Length: 136
Length: 383
Image 1 (tube, one colour):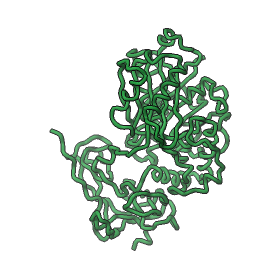
Image 2 (cartoon, each protein chain N blue to C red):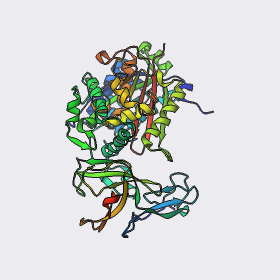
Image 3 (cartoon, rainbow over the protein chains, first blue to last red):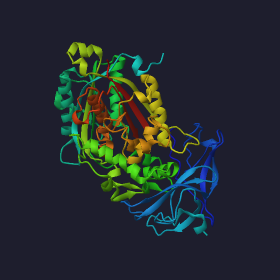
Image 4 (cartoon, chains in turn yellow, orange):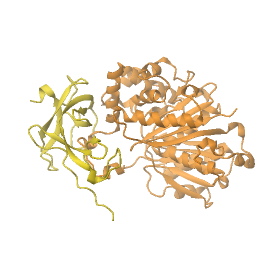
């Protein structure tokens, strides 16, 4: 029987200190984000071995780039993308709260924050990352 | 028992042809492809009737590209199929043609890469797996992030990274098939417009249209068809790999290239210092620094210094992107990997004119594709 697609999973919890909804493979211990239930990329274990794992929304900035040219409707350039190595392991790419790279440096502590968006698509919140001291 | 390409019967590039890479025009993909194939047949001095299988490397033209194009050479009834492997489509078409000949299924096979810009409906967007950035991170930002990380780690400067574009545009200025045929100064490269991070427009490859073709033949075919053996270039390794999970590694792109190239060296029985010419996937300037290190042409963190030292210029230790690379020759997707093989063949034949790397005997072609995949070929001039 062909399997149907797993439903799109929420990527984060909408708490005051948001966490990311990652996955952990019970067979090999691989922790990953974004979540999926097709199978473990590291060892091939199937969905029943993949369990949800909440990842703290804190980490360290491994790289960043301010995007000056963008044609999509969902965000206006310039905006800044960060690569954040989460304290719980996986590296994630996220949009930062600041539009320029002013004051950013690799190694900065980062924290996930929820941003209210008025997108027509209906998603009420978007997860972004901010420098630790600016996140409060 | 398993065999490498080199352990099978020898395969040679005996014909090369291109249609110039250029901005999107009214020219049909049929005209682009036929121009390249006819030039390759003429170069090999053989008839279309001698070709026994054909692989069309294309990512954007659409379903069933081969026969509506190739029938205009005379419909001979040969096996033909499309090869789609993202940016490595043309490289993979070459690999399939090599495997046909090496296995003895055919004596003469064709690989032709052809593409025109069009809407990309890539499968990775259909997995229903979403991340935090979606379409807001496109390839130039993926590589802008790697550029920033690299510069921070090794103390390289944006000027050193931009020098890749200066070198490759200088080479492309002498390549009649290149999309960008104009030398540029460092100041022009840095002047912008800014695209993403430190990457400016001239540090990102142009994606246009074009075609490239290579004809692969066996010793038997060279003998039977009277092909000029002195211009035949042997393919001594063909390696195709896909990304693994490199736990703990910072840069998956570099790791994939590192292990694919290492396997190619082993299969061809060569070392990095044997390379005289290299065509690599320089879609963005930073990639050339990452890959020269991953290929072992210099040590970790030494790429920036190597690029600016002249060692990888034409006339240096190993000419990198003598064609102009993706940055200047262009990256029309399907043709790109096939075009690299054409350039290296031209270099090893000593027919590259003002772009000629002196005494070139060993060359390597490297492409990566979204997914991610990596395809590497080693070409060698026989003594």
